[in-house]
Image (cartoon, rainbow, N blue to C red; front, top):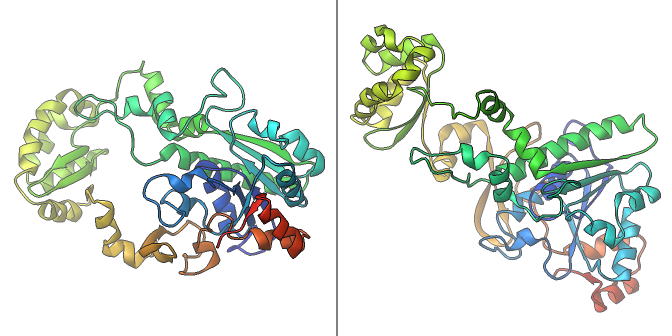
Length: 395
């Protein structure tokens, strides 16, 4: 065991698909666990078909499966189920993301699995949870953005609710689930039995929004105004995000834009003072900020230590000198992608290295033969499974 790989020696059987479950399992792999990704022989993980396809991967499946090994099984067949039971032997963690009831019908519900492996940590990830009137409804990130209030809160100046294009609820659910599994592994040292960990996109989405949700509820649902000068302002050649919260920041901002008189105006002294006068203040600030380029404003705001930043595209962010020098992003190759791909390095772990096992996502069924050999099956057995369509071996 080490800080770089504290979960080395742990065995994870990952049946989940999409992003939330697979990303949780990917985090376990990054911390050293041996993660066996079990996917269907025909479609594989359905995230492999979301968007532009690179070989048998997409930008959804690549980051969610780094460092895993893939075996493709037909779990509708009795033989496929037998192979999965063999793989479950000695496993520490089992992750599944089927809609409630489906995994039980396959024969791998928590009661069945824990009966054979009493200390296993069994993780169920679903859209709305395992109980309640919506539990069996299919759901992905956009559905939960709508249900949890995120879209309603994310209104532009046009007043129209907008979807956040990043899969924020999938990702947050994955990280919350990983946190729960990590804590359970620590507790399991002193426990005779494992446990069932239930995670849902609804829970993850609600927890992600706790500050905004609580504030909205306590304020009677009234949208909180963006008090000038905190917000997005257009400049002569782009856009600036400016954040002014504390009194000394307001004074500094006024000096930075060459309007110290605004700092002396009693209507604008504090956030409370500025709130009712925000339209008037913006009527002054917007044309002023539009009069000069972003870099010119940024220089003054930086000098006066006002929180701000130019709006970058992803391509511009990746080219930033600070991103390069701080090592925030690694560039790695992928066998089916023509150019290097950016991988943000994970907090607390060594940087990704090109070609290293933890930096590569497997093809569907890439490790089927190797995994079955490790579980006691002979070459002849495996050839038979492949011939009968029970197992798929990539390549």
